[in-house]
Image 1 (spheres, rainbow, N blue to C red):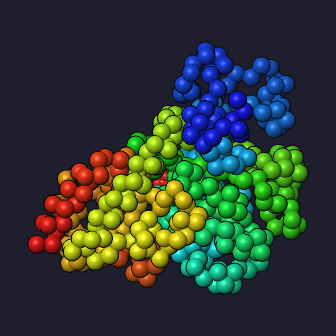
Image 2: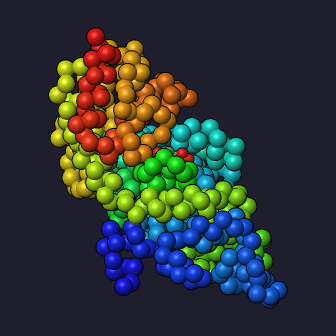
Image 3: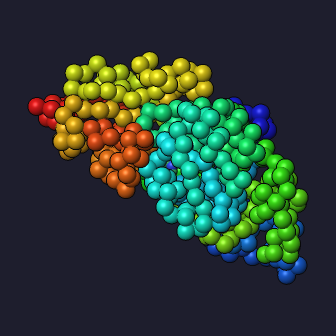
Length: 430
Ligand SMILES: *Cc1c(COP(=O)(O)O)cnc(C)c1O
């Protein structure tokens, strides 16, 4: 059966995973290996010149990592994918092919706290910058662009504010500006959202979260739709269209067409930045993905139950979850994310900062961690932890207020999750 003809749940198990050609091993083996023996010098030369595809060195390519790349590309409906050592590495990798010193991106103001920090400060060391815009204001989004704007960046389900992005609307703006729309699809996963179906051009993931789903393995992936024309405006994306001195003047777009971005990511990005995923982590992520649909279904079911219970509780001020009819984004979820709004949400506790601290300290089943997307239920008080580095203005813009906690609802029995919140809220607000 052709992979392309398979349903999503079948692809979770079969995409990228043929039985191992050397041994017949049914599960993808962990190729814990660095170098690959060349047939002869001529073979080696062809590999190094990108005239023949094959394995050279694990910083660039590895069979276990390749299986994961192929699986994620199929799940997202893209033409190719590059795995990276973390989600943050994947973000730098996605921008690396597009940006020169002096270039900028337009970023949604509702992003994961670590991404806001990466984009506000660290990328400036490369001579790049980001302008943060409220993506509900499409006119402001478009007005923020100048001739050095090279991409728009957003999250599908934004973490942690209960925000749901109108990807088709942003894709329209991106198309008018002639730049790719990059979507961080970490919180939604391709089970809840396939950004390419809605017009996005590039997807990035932190596979650390729901994709692996068990809190064991850091990783990231950049996926390319293959639909963006890098040559439409001459000289706008020189890394992809101009002669590459490190490959005897090879032009990626001319030579590899729709795969230019992916090949550049491997041949230049991984080779020279070295942010390669570990083969062991690729294996863990492949295993996790096998059960992605089953887990996400339960995550969403539980999140709806828990958020609904919290909303009616007198100790709670407000619940921000797009899966509740009270959310201003509920109708957008029905339209664009029909399988649900994910498992992350925030709620405001009566009693402010102090009550939040007591709540976090009193929970027994929930783990107080900086992670999300584990099979277990997790909680964090963003204002005092993940969003600590942000200014108060940025905290408010991203929904990380002092009286607000973020939960990542796990796949335990929902009754136990609610029971734990109930006892901890009693302690926090008495
Ligand atoms: C965790 C996360 C990241 C960063 O991923 P790492 O794997 O921790 O580097 C980026 N975006 C979102 C939405 C995340 O949740």
